[in-house]
Image 1 (cartoon, rainbow, N blue to C red):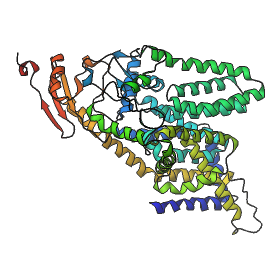
Image 2 (cartoon, one colour):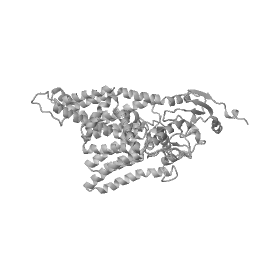
Image 3 (spheres, one colour):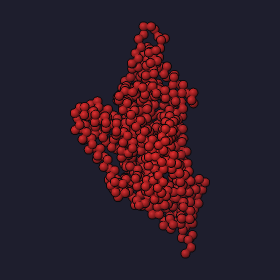
Image 4 (cartoon, one colour):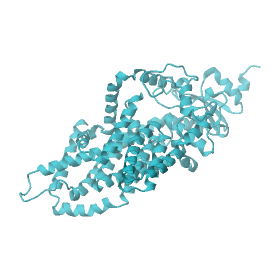
Length: 555
């Protein structure tokens, strides 16, 4: 596959030749026919729809389930919010229902900041939790095209959108309930508003920018802060230059209203305005999971289930090895992970264009590049696996734009130096307006086509990852009794998930899931004697019906 990187030399030469001879009748006619489409206001929506369809098809490989522990927590909190509540009552015998990133005592709630779960509520109410993430992907795809076209032109925007949509990191992580789906959209919408405010100051664009910044901060605080710093600096500079500093006050008010959700959420969850659920969860379960260097050896106040011990040990090792002296090696490892997920195998040739694009940044694109760099630097303070590139999804539109800009510069240079045409022909190195329309459509279709195997691979990966949970649900649907208690022996050591998840109304569910704690199971069996008890082993794929508790306990 490495040799396929050379394939990108072909479109480079084809584009250069097309530019050199863009006055040719066939090229001119095809470009004249395509250009209105690239200028159409509807094309951004078409691009967004294609992005959503691609991601939705990949996601359907796991039947849109919340498969990763983080996803399950977000969805559970959205279900709680949909009931008009901040939390649910604590679980009786909580040790049987422990779930990563979720409190089961002294209340039931997710630890994560509320921005993502609040947005998921409409989909939960509609009975299709994936609705809002897919809409956000649609919006992100449309904004990638629209924003790129606004700062360049239609054919460049089409290539940027194609490069962005087909990046493996997006194909892997965007189709999910993870909060990055929201922050990617908020960054793009915020950049659109910031550019609008700079070009033609209007209050609504500044207020919408403030909303995007604040909602990003109540969704992913560090990611939101990284976005806020350059955006606020540019917005204030532009306002001061035009004598519009009063407008900044209105924006601050909007941002403050959104940010006020956090102390309210904290008060009605932890009981304290200043202690967030995430801070309390970290102190209670995983005191080592903090921004910074080294391993915090403070003991947790509660232990996670035994089946999560291997996962926790791996993360503790990451934090222990994450020191100030390891920053250079961590940075290189993460860059390597990003290269593998963005410039995947046959896309490796795009790295050349990305490097060229770095030397061709416009002032507008430089703001995006600075924000993307800040995002990378900020997460150097947090220990995470190098392959977990989800933390950098917000930067990928900028990477795509820089890459296409480098491709443009390379083709312009090559077209200018081709000396095979008639001596009287005068190339237009600054152009590509005519030839670019035709070339961009062909290349965009080619990028989507050659990415089909990657899309299929990611869908199959989802299918395999979701198989244990889907198998469990299938068994649950075929239990012969109607009121069940299922003890799950879940030893998924190599997966950041658990098969035991909590329900909003556990008393009403047909089959209630609980951790298999061996001899301790009898305590839960006694507390739920009205349910028929089973033990299921997810590793061995076995199911055992337990005798009624009253018959198994001696008086």
